[in-house]
Amino acid sequence: MQENIIKLSPRLFAIASLIKQDADIADIGSDHGHLPVYLAQIGLAKHIIASDISAGSLRAAFKTAKKYDVFDKIIFKVTSGLDGIINTSIDTVVISGLGGETIIEILSNAYRNIDENITFILQPQTKIEDLCAWLSEFGFVLSDARLVEDNERIYLIMVVVLSKQEQIPKMTYYNLLSELSQKNDPLFPKYIKNLIKKAKTSTDGLKISGSAGYFEAKNKLERLIEISQS
Image (cartoon, rainbow, N blue to C red; front, side):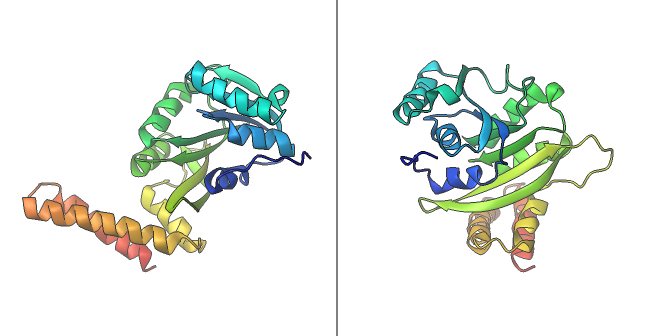
C-alpha cells in the first residue's frame, strides 16, 4: 500500500467502505476522481472505471490520478451515464453527488441491460423520495443504507440491486427511513429531526395559503413523526 494515500471526504469514505474487495467498479460522474484514486491506492478494487460526461471534468480526475501515481490503474471514460459501461465486467456502480432525478435518468436509460449481479451504491443530493419510488417500481431492492455527516450536512447512501423475483418488498422512502431507525444509525435522530422541521415548514405554508397540497403534506409530516417515535 502506498504511503501518500489521498484523503477522502467523510461522504466518499463512507461510500468506499461499502465496496467489496476485488470489485470491478465504475464511478459515474467521477468529478476530480478522488474515489477511484483511493480505491487504486489501497488495492480494494480489481478494475476501476472513472467516467464523466465531460472531457474537461474527466481531465481533472486524470490529473488527480497522475498526482498520486495511479493513472495506469484506472480506465478513464468519457460517456453519458452508463453508456458503454453496463455491458462490461463491472459488478459495482457508484453514482454519488448527483440529484435524484439525474440518477433516475441514468438508470432508466440503461435499465434493459442491468442484471442482478450489479450492485449500485447511490448517494442522491436531492429528490430522494422520487428516487426511492422509481427504484421500487422497477424492481430494485435495498441491501444496505447508512447516513454520513460531511461539512455539517447529513447524506444518505443506499445500496440497491435489481431483483427479478415477482414479489419483492417495496423500497419506499418511508421504509428506507424505518430501516435506518431500526438499525440505530447514530445520525438518524438528527436526520429525521431535520426532515420533520422542513416538512412542518412546508405544511404550515400550504395551510396558510389554502393550497390543495396541504393534506398530502400533512400526511407526510405525520408519517415522519411516526417513524421518529418508533
